[in-house]
Image 1 (cartoon, rainbow, N blue to C red):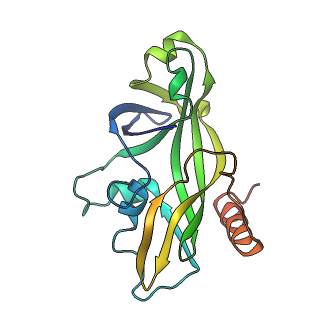
Image 2: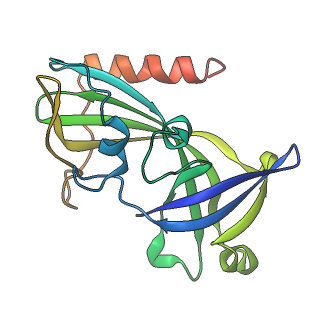
Length: 191
């Protein structure tokens, strides 16, 4: 997967223009957007389990951020190796986490901007496109997990996803699964 920052601008009352700004890293204590958006938000003395939520647009729009990411979005390119033939772009809207001391399952709520789109014109416009609201597919959910957690009010570990392999699935015990199901119900009561 590829991760990017796009600027986001409303056009009229029913469309949004997305423009590529820069490559991004979601994970990693030194450069990742997920730990960066947590900065200063872990309660002092917090122990595991720590249930947390990031509204990505609100977090990026925070005026205290340096550098500024006002009016930006985090975008996932699900199929970057197929960038000449397929456009699969998803905006990350929310991130929920259930941090233990050394690992954290997370839930992403996504908006499907382009879902397996093979239109050559759309593919060529991947860096700058106007998208009507009624073309966005949402909500879409994805579970992942991170090697890293929380201890005594500090993020611990690297906050990176596991290496690619046959056992990368996010295993969810009943307590974090209930938490994520509650998050989905609260975000989308119509489901």
